[in-house]
Amino acid sequence: MFKKSILSLFVASSLFGEITMCYKENFTTPSKLENTSLDGGECNSKYSSNDMRKNGWKIKDISTSKAENGMNYTYIFSKESASEIQTTPLIKNETLKSQLLVLENERLEKEKSDKEINELGNGKKIYESQCVRCHGANGELKPNTSGKLAGLNSDDFMDMMRDYGINQRDNGAAILMAPYSLITKDRKEVVKYLESINVLKKSKENKESK
Image 1 (cartoon, helix red, strand yellow):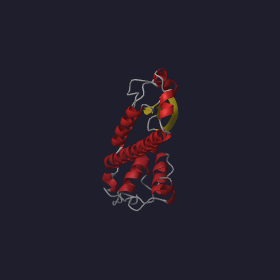
Image 2 (spheres, one colour; image 1 turned 180 degrees about the vertical axis):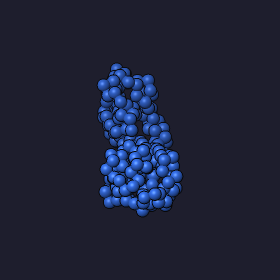
Image 3 (cartoon, one colour; image 1 turned 180 degrees about the horizontal axis):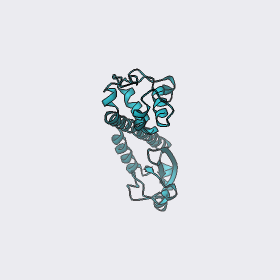
Image 4 (spheres, helix red, strand yellow; image 1 turned 90 degrees about the vertical axis):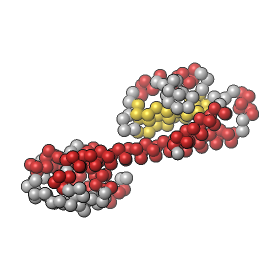
């Protein structure tokens, strides 16, 4: 759907010659953005926003969103001659603008979906490599003095792993668990994975934050 929308948009842009969208994803140096080649649309990974302005395009809008690494930037450029302004119905611009908004929303949804898939994959990998031997594939085992993970509240699991990491918990398993306390990012990814296979129960706060 995402690729199909991009194709439709570029066809519309080439026919009307009025509006095009360019973007840059996961960009970490905003001070260099104006002179960095943008992807998509008329920019086509060749032209920066400064180049586009030199070629007669005007920036109609810029939107930003957080990315896993840096920021995502989306530019909407327009290019109209006096004759085009007189002969082109307003509805054409509004239709293209709507298409651009739909495309941007689809891009954000795809980005969110890709991020969640990546987090689940990382969480599964960490759990299977560090936890499954003692706690079981479904959190059903009760190793040493530790309790089962199955049925545990997600927030309680996060607190427990944090406490092991800062030596604030000692139920007889502290020495064994300290090496597996995990950094915050890894803990969150393991939680997402265990929630996805119904090992951990989502807390009220956890549900509201998703």
